[in-house]
Every structure is written in C-alpha cells, then in structure tokens.
Amino acid sequence: KQPFSPAEVKRLMLDLCSALDYCHERWVFHRDLKPSNLLMNNLGEVKVCDFGLARYYHEPLKAYSPTVVTLWYRAPEVLLSDAGRGEHTRYGPAIDMWSLGCIFAEFVLQAPLLCGQGEIDQVKRTFELLGTPDEESWPGAMSMHFMRKYPQRRVPFNRLRDKFKKASFTGAQSTLSEAGLDLLTKMLILNPEKRISDEEAIKHVYFREEPPPKPHHLMPTFPSTHTKHTKR
Image 1 (cartoon, helix red, strand yellow):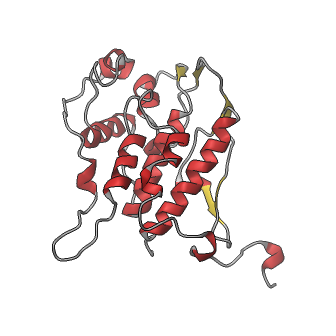
Image 2: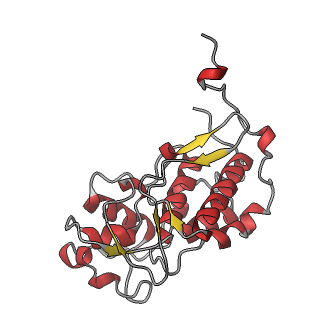
Image 3: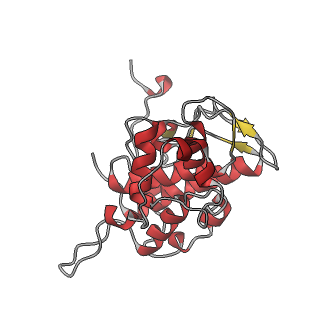
C-alpha cells in the first residue's frame, strides 16, 4: 500500500482535527474513532462516519459506559477504570483526541501503534511506549481499579520517538518532523486533563511548518463506487 506523504498526512490530520472541533463545539463526542470509521471521497476530503456510539456531553463530565472505542484506539482513562467490571466511568471528549493520536501515528507508520491482545495487554503496551503514570503526572491514576488490581512495572520514559525514524546524515528524511512528534505526544498524554484539545491542535505549529497541508484537489483520489456512478 502506498504511504501518505508528509503533506498528505498533514491535510488528513488538519481535516480530522477540524471535524472533531465541529463535533465538540456542539457538545458531541464520537467515542469510536478508528481508521475504518473514516471515509475518503474522490475530492480528496476525509469524513468521519459511524456515529452509533456518539453521545452528547456536558460539564461537569458525567459517567458513561466503559465499553466504547475499539481496543487499539481506546484512551487510558477508559481502560484503567474498566477492568472488565462494566461500571460507568467519567470521561469526556479527550478520548476522541487519544483515538485521533493513534490514527495519526498509523497514517505515518502504515501500521497500528498499539495492538493489544486484550485490555491488560493494551495497558501494558501503552505504558511500555509512553511511560507509567504516577501521582504527579496523573493525580488519581494509581488508585484506579485497574492499577490496584494489576500493578504495572514502572516505565519512567516516553519512548514514542523510537517508533519514528530520525533524519540521517545520508539524507534519509524523518518519518515525522519534530513538530509532528510534539503534536502526537500531546495527543497521547495519559492524563486526559493535560491532553491537547482539538482547538489547540488546529493551531499547532505542525500545520504551519513546511511542507504545508496538501490542497484537497491534489490529494490522492479513488474511483467512485456509488451505484449511480458505476457502469452496469
């Protein structure tokens, strides 16, 4: 499969951040963002679809069902409070930004970022890559049901940079710029209170540095499969 260029990734991410901003401004969060819930038309536009799990929210945030978001794109505040108990837990639109961060990484890597084989393994992989939370970085995290039931090995460092090639002296380009890595890191902050919002993400320097987001009319296009455009 043909990887997206840096300018194409930037266009996709800017459009998706704008889509989330549109939803969140109207107090709606999607709760199941993943690549298979994104559609791209033959005009180079990406669209968010499948709002079957979407809900209205308000502040202060209330408790919702933890059985949301496909596992590989599920935010830690949902994973840690669930632990198979099925009890409602408090979360908000920050879970959409986590999912979008996972999608961002997947656009660049051409493979899912966190591929857990169950909730426990998903938490383990998340902490091994992004570090284990403590009371300073995420107050209250250590008292969550999952952390008390399944104590985690302490991983002090964020190793996200290791997933992306750095530019080399041979002329090989980085798969993600430093600004792009900064945005991704902020989207994947474990503490939802510190995670970047869609509005903040849109203003991030990543979208202003070179190369600029590719114009829609220059994006890869695909033949229409709609019945009225298909020859019988």
